[in-house]
Image (cartoon, rainbow, N blue to C red):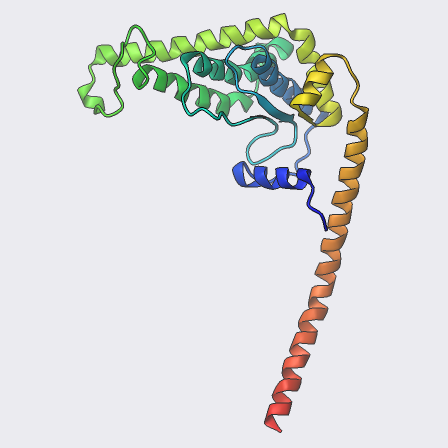
Length: 257
């Protein structure tokens, strides 16, 4: 039986992030909010200089995520300040999209992991990478907390907060400028659930993805066939075990004779 790229891709995500939560059923409104959240990340990524290249965007829930945008790994281990700031902006894109579409009172906790990732980057930029003019070209990584002055701690917190707030404002600016594209992408995610970078680019050009419907049909047939084989194996297993036990008993009786 051949192994498809979709199967390999799914296996990779199972290891890196977690298995699909196929049993999780979201309301239409929650799924729509998730679509705009992920579209926000993707649009900020597409229109921000220095951003990582998108691999795919999906609304398939995995682990603690109800959807996600995954990125191609950078070949160069070095990252510029421009690239780090772009990562902060992208992290803020989900919450910025929620705010634009639903308003302040309807934002969700879905951006929690985004804020955590952005804060880690900003913290390292300030305390390890020497990317804050106010703190200067120093590293506080190996310095004990009690050895850092109250004034320096306050400056660090202010600088981290500034980087995060500026990233959020840049994300909002990008989404306001490209709200039409964000809406198109969110609707496409609701329709197709998972989109590659090439498919996202086609959607933003206003082109149809008729091939996706055919792919979804093939994927469903493959999943149904896989489930069918699993059920057959489950039914056959007791028969196989009984046969093994019978053979063992026969062997024992023959040995006794």
